[in-house]
Image (cartoon, rainbow, N blue to C red):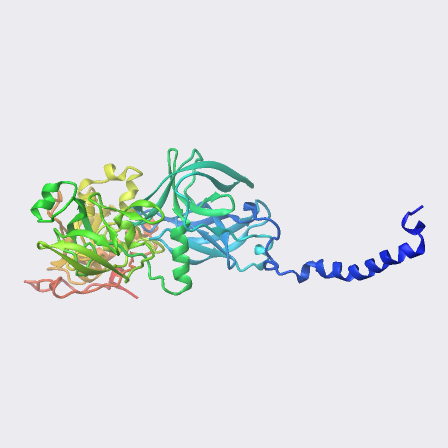
Length: 539
C-alpha cells in the first residue's frame, strides 16, 4: 500500500500544501523548447559537431588549352568548405575559376544542392559560397574562427571522403610568410606536419571546436594553411565595406647582415633594417622608397637585419607581412628609413595587387584565352598559363627565351608580350610551318604593345603584304604573307580545324600614338581592293 496515504491526516496536509505551491514554480523553470532563446531554427542544436560544419564541394569548370586556345574541355574539382555565420561557406578560391556548376553536399550524404559564389578574391585565395536552397542549412552549425591562432600544438585536418568524415592529425611547425598560392603577394601561412594525402583544397584545420585554417597547398608531409586570423580580418573588412583587396610593397630588398654595407651608407649603431634594391614593381606608380634606402621601421615595428619584425601574436615574421596585417590596398604605412646619411619618416601607400602588374602575368582567371588567327599564324599573349603548357616543370621545359621575359617589367610602351605560338599549315604560309614560340615585335611597322594591336596593324598592309617582325634574338627576324590571300586562308583553316572564331580579345585595343607610330606609307600603289576580312570584322 502507498505509504503517503497511510499517514495520519494532520501529517498529510503540509505535504499536499507544499506540492500545490511548488508545482507552478516547476512549470516556470521548465519552459517548452519553443520559448528558449537558441540558435536560428534551421541550425542544429546541442553540442557543436564538425559533421555539421564541413561541406563537400564539387566544382565543374571549363578547362582551356593555351596551345590551341579555341579548344575547350571540362574538369571537375572536389573541395571542402566550412559553414560560418550568415548561411555562408568559406573556402579557398583555388579550383573555382571558370566554373560552370557548383554543387554542395552536407553531412556526408543526401542529394547535392546548387551553390554559387558570393565573392571571390584570387589574390588572397579565398572565396565565399552559398546556396539559395533554404533546406540545405537545416541541421548545420557555423564554425567559430580562431583569432589569433595557435603557433604550436596538435591539429586535426578534416574533410569528407566517400561520405565519411576523414580526421587526420597534424603538428603545427610554424607560422611564416609566403606567397599566396595563386599570387605573388606575401601573406601569413601556417606550416603543418601531416601525412594526409591530396589536400590543399580548403580542408578544415581545427583545434577542438575552433577552425584555425584552411589547407591551401600540400607537398610531401607538409601542409600549408591560410590561418583564420588572416581570414577573419578580411571578413571583418568586407562586412564594414572597407576591403579594397590586397596591397603589397612594390620594391625588393636585401638583408643588411653585412656591416660593411651599412657602414657605406653611414648608418651608425648595430646592424639593422633592410636595404632597398629595386623599386617600381607596380607599373605607373611613383614609389616614395628609393634604392639604397634602409628601412628601419614599418608602422612602429622595428625591422632587423634579416628583414623580420617581432609580431605580438606570432613572434618573428618577415616584414612583407606588414603589407597585409590589417592593411588593404590604398591604405598607408608609416616607414622610418635611413637616406642620405639621416633618418627620415615617409608615408607609403600600398598599391593594389593585380596580375597585370607582371609582364608575364601569373594568372588569368574567368576569361577565355585570347588569340588572333591570321593566315594560319596563331598569336597569343605571353603569360604563365601558356608556359604551364609545358607541364609541372615548365620552368625548365619551356623555351628559355620565353621564360626570360618573366624577369622583365611592364612598361607603358610594352604592357604585354605577344607570341606567334604556332603556324597551321596552308598554301598561304608555305615555308613557315615550323615557326613557333616566337615573340612578335612589329606588324606592318606598328609596335605590338598588346594582342589587340594585331587587329589594328593588319588593317594596314605594306605594299600588299603583311610583314611580321620578331624580337631581337629570335631565330627568324621577319615573315611575310600576301595580304590579298590571307582572308581566304584564314577561313579555310577555321573550317579544317573547326575553329569557331578567328579572334578572341578580352582587353580593350588601345592605340598609343606616342608609343605606336603609324605604319609607314606604302611607296607604291596599294594592293587591289579585296573582300573584308573576317579577322577585321570586330563587333
